[in-house]
Image (cartoon, rainbow, N blue to C red; front, side, top):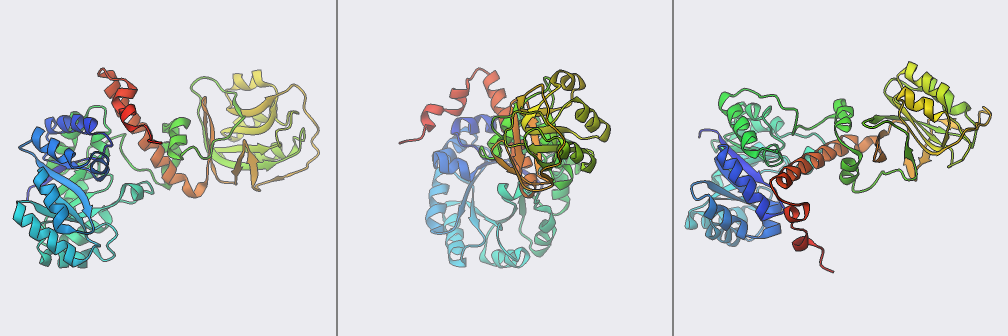
Length: 430
């Protein structure tokens, strides 16, 4: 089959989904998918509204059915779904019942291979069971740790004569790769529905599919370990705090920075006593370019850092300093534009006694910090991201930023934050 662009409407709100759908169809979308979150949020009315509003467009109900195959397919098909998804990890009986119901009601079955251990072998089995399409799918949560579906796509496509769909973080740079690897149905979600101009984003991706050439994009990509710093520099600390579900936020530390300054780097941890500035200064020699020195003084009010230490960091390429304690020479540090976060500012320093240690676990701003953890700060505050979760949190924070960009665009069109998100409807019932 000729390559098809399927737009996944993974929204919470029907109103927003219909708005994005209209723009996507305008931009050339071939199929519209009522995403699983959207169906769970708004029910089968989503499918009815999509079919009513876009009668000439193929509507996919992404039910991810695991049981009662015939019953769920009947419900979706009667609501207007042309294609219904069933999970490949379910039993053959459920899939067979889904296929029978689909034939009865004029729909087709797409089987999602997510979590299937041997996808190529299962593809052959599913073809014999009479399904219509296969879906090589990497979940949104797995996308956040930089997994892509392209690795296994080629093997699945070569194992069966069925059209294969592919989903998992595709954008204008990767849809051409997916098509070349054997995908007939290119499922794109975030790179379209999070775009400020959905119709333009759709047209760009359609062009990439048609030309089989990647079109560079600075957005809607997934970051790996190699470019975590770039991702953290792109987002704000509020974006990151939302992504981390409010974890990692250091409290009581004040940004001592100029407007627009950003602090991103890996932690060099220091434990010292109030006023003892020996270990903090020695840590500069152990730091590498791009690091952030994080100092646990237990909140002490006597300065352990000042202008000379900051100058030393600039020479060494250290990104900044975070102090659960006091800093002095703040006027000069601001002139140097050296990022500093501290609990106190004081004119007096102590003595370099050499108590404490470098590189151990510390507590700063109420958070545990280990050497190598990521530190991200701006005018809104500062957070620590455990190094083992850095890739995931970077991608989740970028996702928050991109979703907010789309909401901002909808507000500009005459909405308000409350009306766009339908807050009264979605207030938690107590």
